[in-house]
Image (cartoon, rainbow, N blue to C red):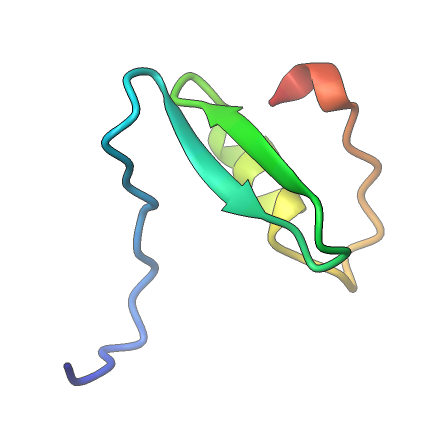
Length: 56
């Protein structure tokens, strides 16, 4: 598959959640209702965002 540089969304066969592995090796279920700002904050390291676990 050729990369287009476009952002892609996560997908899952689990109803209502997507399973995500974090860089510390932990695995979390992320709700489909997560806000785009929180989703992007979880995917950045240099942004310095503090994300509460109840927001995902």
